[in-house]
Amino acid sequence: MLGGTEQTAVRLGAALLIGAILGLNRELHGKPAGLRTHALVSLGAAVATIVALESPMRSMPIDPNAIGRVVQGILTGVGFLGAGVILRDPIGHVTGLTTAATIWMCAVLGIVCGLGYWTLLGVAAVFTTVILLLGRPVERLAERLFKKHVNAPPDHSV
Image (cartoon, rainbow, N blue to C red):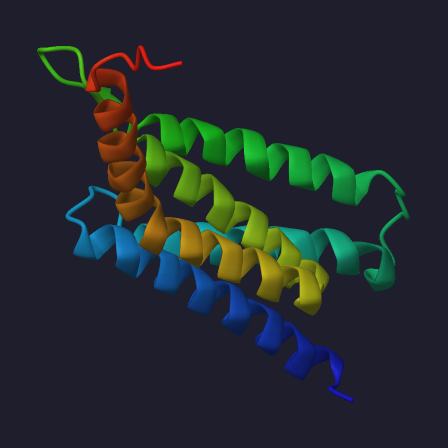
């Protein structure tokens, strides 16, 4: 069993690692928020969560709602950060939605790391990574299939 300092280091290291992995994906796709941004968001969320968890243990008054408020604050604040990467070009195309969602997800995963919910972290991190890696190819395939179906001549056979 890990001691308090080691456990904290593992939680922060996991947050940093998952944020960096997801940020690397965005970086490789040329997005404005990359490895550093995502890693810092995840790490910051983990730090804030750990502080909220450990404050009652350090002779501060115990507040059972502290964790909930910290989580709400993190997710609201990161939502504003994510909004900064959403842009509309001159012809009306919106860009940055996936990066904004990934930044928000990094905050969620950082919170999960801070809480030490390792199974949840593993499953959510795998799902998030799969979506980032396979989402675009699946969208393109569906688009081709859908367009093919829509443009097909009507079938009048009975």
